[in-house]
Image 1 (cartoon, rainbow, N blue to C red):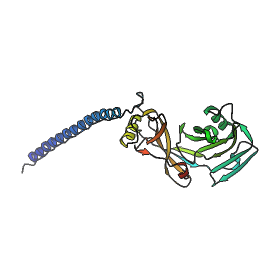
Image 2: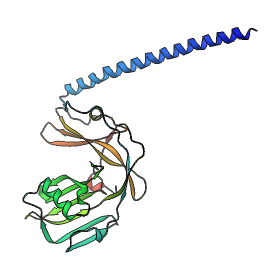
Image 3: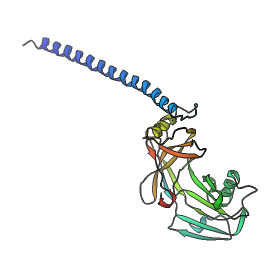
Image 4: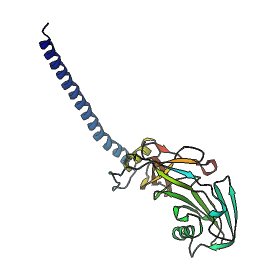
Length: 270
């Protein structure tokens, strides 16, 4: 047998096979690219058909973001910066503080005055941002910030402040995450537009609605231990509904998928 000739034949055959496989790969890749190009207008057309709009200036180029872990802080009476108070610690992590002498909040009960009050009168108060004012209950809810981004709906990273009819703070409840650590490897984020499309594909967005803004924050992803939680980059999508009311929706900013938070009465130690 002429091994030299056989060897040459094998080389030619494998070369032809490689060329065939590479051409097949290019064909499949081109088909995928064409499908992507075709699919995007199709989604936009369906959104337009349902009269769902979103901002035209949504960013498409995004910086990577890490997962972050944090530890639930065991709060004590020493974590109350204001004197003349009554303090109770519940389940090691929840600080319940009542002011013996109510403290004036400011001329108005608004975001600026409430956040300024927290910064001056509550332990690590500047680590929280106003989330909601419940006027009929004289109550404000604040969420902790993680790397300057809001930690959405965690029962273990919030402050609830209550005041009287004279606009004076009477008591507050506080939980706090500490020892924040970034994961060594950051992750690619899905785009805000992709997050909107996710809501649409899951039939979450209603007809005749308007996406007014998309903001990046964090949400609790998993309990690493009794005290430690891992936080996931999360898109918050604010939508104005047909009746003029607004709704918040949340999408996993790394792995896609809609995030549904528990109602307040169902929330545990997150």
